[in-house]
Image (cartoon, rainbow, N blue to C red; front, side, top):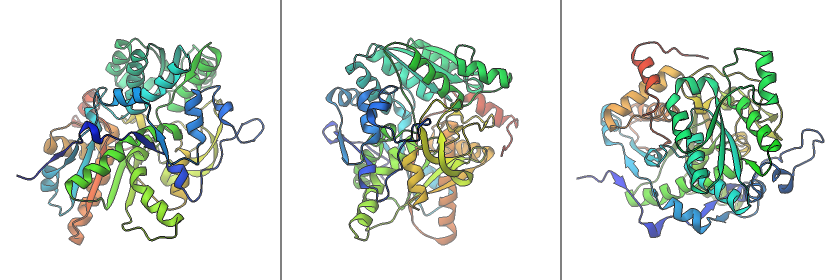
Length: 443
């Protein structure tokens, strides 16, 4: 019988994260102080983030960063996650492609987000911080941070995008179960929230509004730090545990990817899977050596929030109110109000600085997926592989199906690897709407 699942022994788990900035030919442009337009230092960022996270954010020298032993210990609770050959999906499509997925949905909180929540809370605890705050869209990150904060004895406050809070009430319940305070954004609890509501009383909220409120709380509350679930470079760094495992697991399967796909909101799960594989191509260019295999890296974003395919590369704020540093990124503009799609984790106006530079330099590409196509793909995946994927992950599955169908036309036996970043068991209202014919394509 063909082997379907590949797992690593505990002794094989990565002990370092991979910092792709060190190997990039063209480094990401610096983050800027919005008032002075001068590059920010790690000390500047440490006013908002844990000092170690601020240091990791700007590190463009060291390709490998040690994972603290206590973080490794927490990872061992649930890692490695399986690499799975999707035989049933291949058969349903009639494709010669070999499709694999890295199943991050088996993590305790149901998504990849806990991979960064644990180290961020660890660093905050080591620094003597007592409170952490954050934003969340669909709630995967808020749930992960709430769990990690409780694990390290920290108080946690989460601003959840208001429309996502209404669409997915049980994710708020999960956060409160772990002891977090959850507030719908925009809210009347911050100056930023009040300004947004005053200008637009019916604003459904966005990750940009929620970031503004979380940053404001962090900067006005003693002994409190802001934590982030995507976009920033240190978050993608922590997520490389995914790709480092996947590389070893693909070797166990005796194959190597031709195509790597992940859904895209700010870039954390895409970078987490892609960057460890991409390092070989970057090193090849840097050392003027031809890479043995050029992988097609694809980031799948919603057609209604297409910063990679239709955004502009420029300096922009990471939040709606303009509290964050200026980030060099592909953006739709920090005042962009995304449509009320069910993939709440992908409703963000900009892309991380690393991904933006890599896209600009041609190492990867973006594709935009209409909402109905994403749910069609999620339904097929559920009915073949027995896993109901999160609406965000459905975008990666849809892009995978597109590529697999191309192989039918060409007859190529390409190896496709995608990241199943989370399960959809708390997103069933979205599936109900789709199955009832109530969803439409937006954008």
